[in-house]
Length: 406
Image 1 (spheres, rainbow, N blue to C red):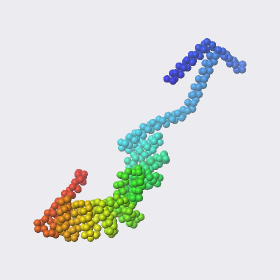
Image 2 (cartoon, rainbow, N blue to C red):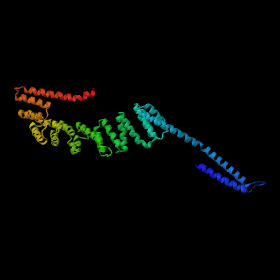
Image 3 (cartoon, rainbow, N blue to C red):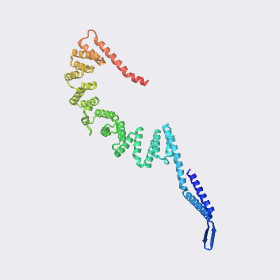
Image 4 (spheres, one colour):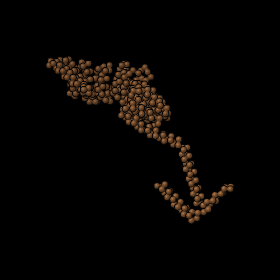
């Protein structure tokens, strides 16, 4: 549209000039030495215009010829980039479809012409790992770092993820430790480091790492809470007294809520009992059972080597505090049997069975009935009932695994 307007304007101007020349052609004389040229002004202007146009187009042609190598180079580069982008898209599609070999070939072939070489090399590394070619994977990651040194953190992070996915936990640990030195509070680095230590069963290393993870607001508590519980349980289950980290140090570092956690209490007091520190174990178990009527804590308390009478008095206090419980009735019955208080033991067992019949309660009741005299052969009936309850309980426990295996 603009060109048409310019042509129209040029025609109008030309027409005006032609008309003016027709009215008054003018006169022009050009001399140079002994040579003179005589013509009308219109012819002179026309020849000048032709010479100017010729000079303009000649100059344009020379400039175009001079710039042609660069133009051809840019055109060729654009063509390669367009083709490369198409091939990269094909490589990514093949990767998504699981055609790892084809994907790897396309991504690597066009990495140098790509606008996103990092994406090419990282995707090729993933494709190589999916084929079990770990050496090629590392080669692509090295090329990515060489091509884009300013993206080394992202490349190393990808390396660690791939190593972890491949089960190369020692290598992943080395990579992540380097990353943590560079970025101590990076949430992904800390999370991957936690998972790596967990795979290697390095409980002490995890214990020292957890404070940094817990203080990082970008890491959700759902990620580290189960790990923390497992770490503490494992540490309390091991003998650490000879190292720099001791069980007593770990226990003192727990908060009040953690010290009432049955899993921690049972694991820690088991170690105390093993080392002969029954007094400390008793104190902690009493605190735990004062706060909660937990059957596992009760079972651990019953293992303490303290007089049965003292245990009985303590259990009766808990019974009054927490209310009727078949577990407490059974434990009290066991203590009465130990002290040969048969009638009292029978009373506790009757109360237990009325709340919740169990194989243990019937077994103990059969023993008590034998000691009290058994003219009606009630002990055998109790043993039989207890056996039936035990068999039924075992069937219920085996049912889920049986259905899953089928």
